[in-house]
Amino acid sequence: MTSCLFGGMVLVGVLLTSCDVETSDNGHLDGFWQLRAADTLATGGHSDLTGLSLTWAFQGRLLELRDLHGQRTDIVSSFSHEGNTLRLFDACIVDRDKGDIRIEEPTELSPYGVNRIDESFTVEQLDASKMVLKSDRLRLTFRKY
Image 1: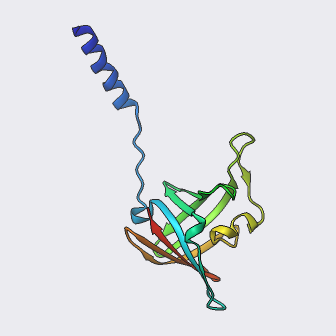
Image 2 (image 1 turned 90 degrees about the vertical axis):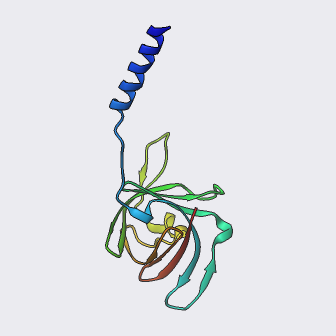
Image 3 (image 1 turned 45 degrees about the horizontal axis):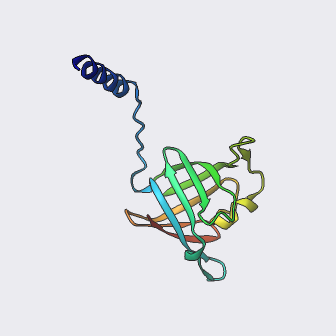
């Protein structure tokens, strides 16, 4: 009985010391966001996107763009967040069987409110429950899950 207990304690100790804990300094940006609206700046148009279930999920230095209804391709992208600027770049279509495919044209990105392969947004609002991003074309409003 004591050898099992000792062995279990050793195993737990090994597991705890062998795990690298990855932390992120993204603050409120980290997490799962639902795209709720897109406003076209040039025309003043408004699109309610709540029924589409389009999400952005930030963790570490990766962003995942996902359609929870499965009608669009999942995308991963690198990002940087400095001050009030959020930059998205190096986007790829997620294909676990064939390997991720680098996106060369922004048509795959546009349903998520991204209109360029390398696009920067001004962060107009970012707190624990709401995010508002503005590009040169759109204002995107998100709610945090």
